[in-house]
Length: 120
Image (cartoon, rainbow, N blue to C red; front, side):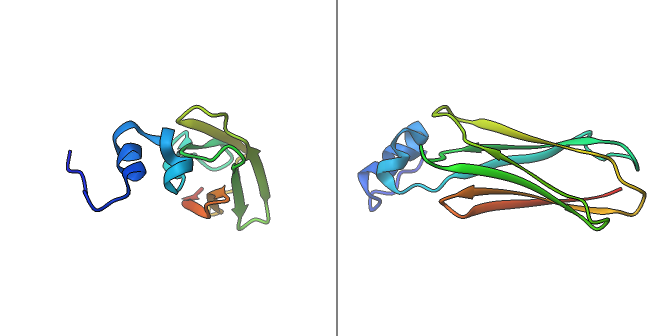
């Protein structure tokens, strides 16, 4: 591991031992992964949107949302406990062939987000 000696000491500790020092080192939350299950849903097949996050501050929140070109919208709010990492999920009903779903995970208060798109 390469350590930047110009970085504040708390940042170096956060890089070495994970998120334990994140509140003291101004380390932003991280979206580790986003996925759907099944990976590529067929038309009319429901799926689960999952996002694994880490380094979310104690009063932070995670919102998963879906916006479909067929007009469907939904969201789920998660308040991760103080364990890392944490996975949030949102169940989404299937749609007709050709419908496009935009899936987004957003972490507050850090403003971190990641988007995943699927087409039925």
